[in-house]
Length: 462
Image (spheres, helix red, strand yellow):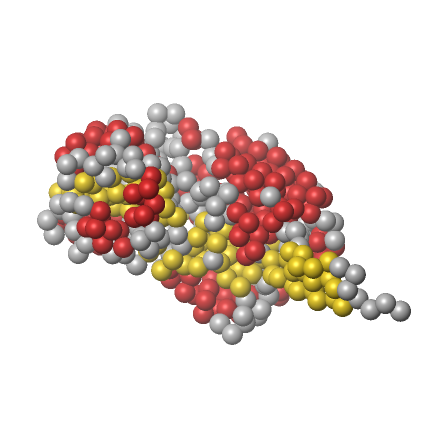
């Protein structure tokens, strides 16, 4: 029996899109087509591949109006924010711009006696399993360098954002990427794991939950398939006594609440020096109370529904447990009448929290943040590191050297100073602990989707 993958819109609870999942034979045939198409694609050269990929990005931009509306229906992001095009364009253009240098051979010796070098070969077929929270941005992180490096790409998008994968396929095909080189496929979990276990791919990139990452690792066990796994976070912000408090509140609270808190590197816990704590909390509450929860198609809405009722349920449970354990909720839900007990969820700021509470330890992925006072850097460091995750940490001080010294002691993939919730394509996007392994963006992003091939050539004269 064919599995049907459905997208339930958080806007009104209706089935927005549904597609049949590929069966085993159709999925295997798709892999075979990708493998056959990959070598001719690689033979085109970096400049031509880059040109076609960027033409695909331009084609995606031309669909902006439709994409923004579809995003609102699929995962609830307010239309006022205009989609993800700024980040998509920035990342694609940067990665295309460094491609020739990133993929250039390392020449150890080129003499009349020896040619010794290391070249970067494509992995073959790269499988991208993309999440729903930033369905274009997160996918582009791997798709663009993988295609430019000469790989074929198969994209499996999350059920919540089925249409996003289709848009990407249409755009890249319009740009000149052959249909078999970039394929959007619809698969259920069993079909996905079966393809990985069958050693179908040279590299698999997955963005999602820890449980999902564990399932990918189990499926890949014994295949020696390369894996890139970004599995979540509980990202901290630490506001020191010399921080610009107004700037810190504005950026950290935006990092906690934007996209209804559904950001991989969103701020989920904040530690504030005790001298600024009361003022920070007061300003944070005022900031949140200025949000407008509502239908994402309403121009006034700044906070849309969470992508799924079950995601909102998890956040509600974390908040209720924390309050029952002594936390204080500072946002009056009555100020957010659109909260319907389902996908539409009022934001919340919690104080009197500690690390015995789930809301301060487990990923919330919703519009809630806990704020704690700290007396010094050492206390803040211990709390920031008291987490199973390690994606980003945001430090706030006027002393860069102090921040750098402290940042080197934080168990995290990226350290921010006086900013948060941003992926810089020039530096590696990576994490540690339960956040996963591997890296995207930067030169190292190209290393993930290629493998080294060494040449040691002794030249013999006749």
